[in-house]
Amino acid sequence: MTLDWGYGPKNGPQTWVSHFPDAAGQRQSPIDIKPVDVKVLNSNAKLHWKYEPETLTEISNTGAAWRVDVKGKGSELRGGPLLDEYVLNQFHCHWGESNDRGSEHTINGQYFAGELHLVHWNSAKYSSIQEAANNPDGLCVLGVFLKPGKKHEELDKVVKQLNKVQYKNQCCRILESIDPTNFLPLNSGYYTYHGSLTTPPCSECVVWIVFKEPVEVSIEQLEAFRNLKSLCKEEKCYDEYDGFVKRNFRPTLPVGQREVKECRQ
Image 1 (cartoon, rainbow, N blue to C red):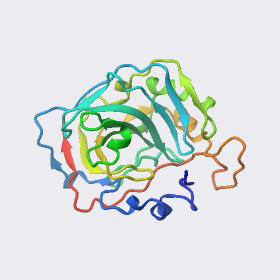
Image 2: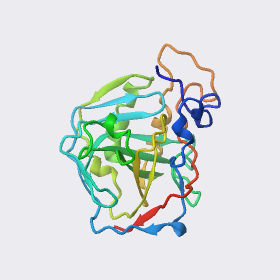
Image 3: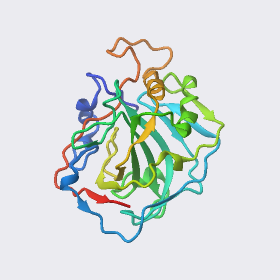
Image 4: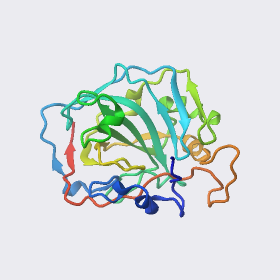
């Protein structure tokens, strides 16, 4: 059974805990990162990623966001805070109704226009992403902040397909090659901590790596995100956003006793 969760007043993050107990946990994400409080990551292994440009990937409208599922074959993420090798599974995005608020993580309380998430799973220890998601080291998510600026050419390969997935549950093939490497900021340090999925079921299975430096996307690209519908084509809606996905970010949660670490790469 798929529960009707979302970001509105009746089904938004404040209601998730009633259906998803993990949402009340002590290691929830996102968080507000305060650089003055972080510790230095002691690791001799530099964070390393290698992605094969993905072809014939599928983009879908989940009702909460757009998501691109990839084959992951030939991709690898390792080093830094990771003890194992992780494989890319999908990437998606979070945004807000305006360009000054839309990221899930914040830095000293500052929001960005959006946040891109590249979701990987621990292929060294687990046989599937479903199994991995039941373990605290099962997933690793790379978080990339988005800020208004020039058009992002790689991301535009996704944006050009959004008119084909305007409504919830619609999906289509992306016939262009997409290289996830081009989503990551160059020469950027990062913050890392142990947390959770930011959407239900909010499982506490994620090693987070949040890059310090944002990447630029155009205002037109951000507007294309906001034009997605949160409902199926035949459904009617009378919510505050007339059924559009104008915002899909979860508010920050307490850091608690967790350590947030910094790597300058």
